[in-house]
Image (cartoon, rainbow, N blue to C red; front, side, top):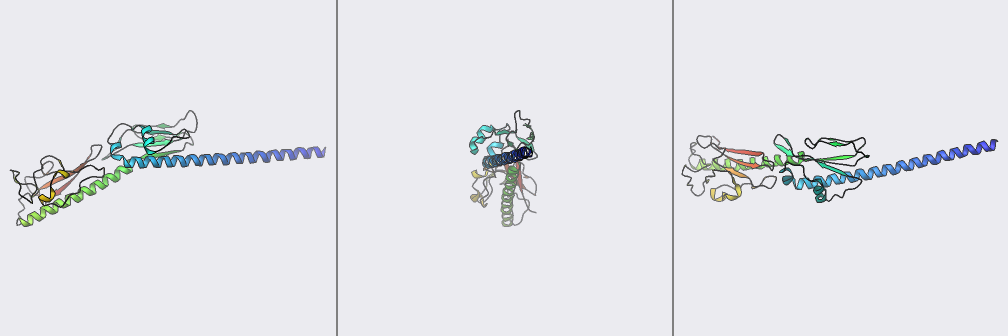
Length: 259
C-alpha cells in the first residue's frame, strides 16, 4: 500500500511539473508573439510617420480623412496580425491643421476599440497595442520654419529700404518700398506689386534687393505685395511677404521702414 501511495504521489508531482513547464512554455511563446507584434506595430507606425512627413503638404491640404489603404501601400506597410488603421479628418488648432492616424492590433472579436474621426481621439480595447501618428508636431515645425524664412525676407527688405533712404538723404517721407503713384520705377528701385505675387516672378537684383528666399517649408513659393496689407500713405511705410499654408492659413511678415 505504501508503495502504491508513493507511486501516486510521484505521478502527481510529475504531472504538476509537466503542467508547470507547459504553462511556462506557453507563456514564453505568448511573450514572443506579443513582442513580435509590438515591433511590427512600431515599425509600421514609423513608416507611416515618415510617409506623412514627406507628403505633409498634400495630406493636410485635404479636409477629408485620407484613404488608409493607400497610405499603408505608399508607406510600404504590409498588413499583418489583423492590423487596423484609421485616419481622422483634418483637425484645426489655431494656425495649425493636421490629421491623426492610429494603427492597432485587435485583442479579440468583436474589438471594442473606438476612434473619433472628428477629433482623432482613440479609445483602445483592453490590452490592445496601438500606435498614434499625429501630424501636429510635423506641421508645428513647418510653420516655425516658414515664419523664420518670412522674418529673414522681411529683414532683407528693411535693409534695402534703409540703404535707399540713406542714398536719398534720409528723407523719411519717401516710400522706397514702392515707386511713385505712376508706378514707373527706375533701375535699382522696387516695382509696383499691387496684388500678391510669387517672389520668383520679380527681378530682385534689378530692383537692388539681394535674392529673397523663394519657398516655405512646404515647397510653395512665397508671395509679396507693396500695396495689399501695406502702409503706403504715411511713414512708417511697409510691405508684406507671406506664405499660405496648405490648409489656407496665411502666415505673414511685414517689412517696416525704420524711422
